Length: 419
View 1: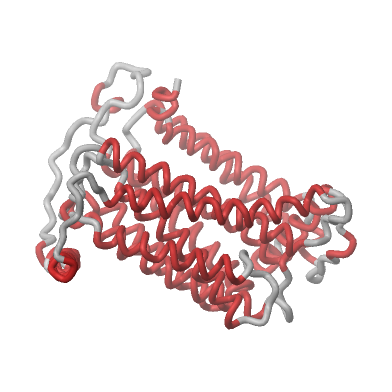
View 2: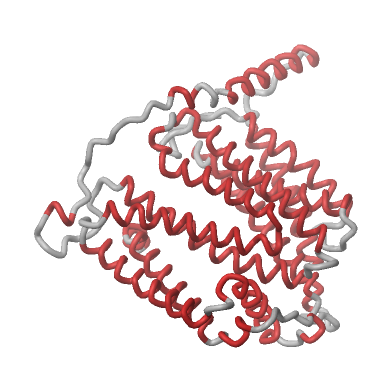
């Protein structure tokens, strides 16, 4: 069943995108009056039920959409619904024939970029012009996704590090912008509601990117033929024109310098202590130890926030608590994933990239939270200060270990890696 869904993922994604656009269009048509009117403020004190909370979310989405289609909501809604219906037709093309693969490749890549551009424009209402940093990072990610087959797999780690670096820069500056205005022009309700909507559009954008890249590089039969013309129904192997990436490769050898520095430092430490590491020791043991310590403190803080929900005096209007709970839940999921990937590194010698990505995202989230606590006069940080400092002190070595850990990049994530 799972294998069948995986083989049909490009078709399913097309259907999901179609449903998303249809629902969004219907939502716009049912709220044309609100879109034409002035921006409505959310009164957090009036949020008493889950329905009020959902209504506040949709109200924030309406305020955001009004900046783009407020003058023509009916036309905009109809066009979006029509585009959603068209996505169902696109799904049928992908399922039944390869005749339109070339055109659909550019269509999906353009759709992905277009969705992200629209999202970036909407994000400027919350993050200001710093939102364009996310667009820049996405363009780098887009180019990597398209051309990664032509890049040297030995530098795959450097590729991911560069992408994460630009996303990290965008996250830091946008969060700094949000917390600078959160008490004056932006409320926790704004941030939580708008970020949820951004996440939905982002996921749609990345799904479109995945299908575009799949069609670009597809070389095998994915679907059972519906008619008997082989040239229309099978994605046959084709000769690809090779690109000269030697000029790019010479700038991506910085990991070699990191490994050399690591080896020199370890040699000096061994000489200083006049001892060597025991033969049974693996760096993954240290990663698991620090990972479980981090899990304990994150779970403790999450449990404290979660306890507020079961107490009798909690109200849904306390958006600050809900905002913190959501972010702590994300942190909890990330540390669990990190431990899981670390176990796979230890047992299967695989999933190095995913381990590095999860620890980077978690470290960035916790470190930015500490920065907000220390330098921004707002009460919306994730952890109490002692926990936050302690977690940064624990997660920073884990990130450094991941950066200095040597492994090979390649197509086979389970075999083509080494510590």
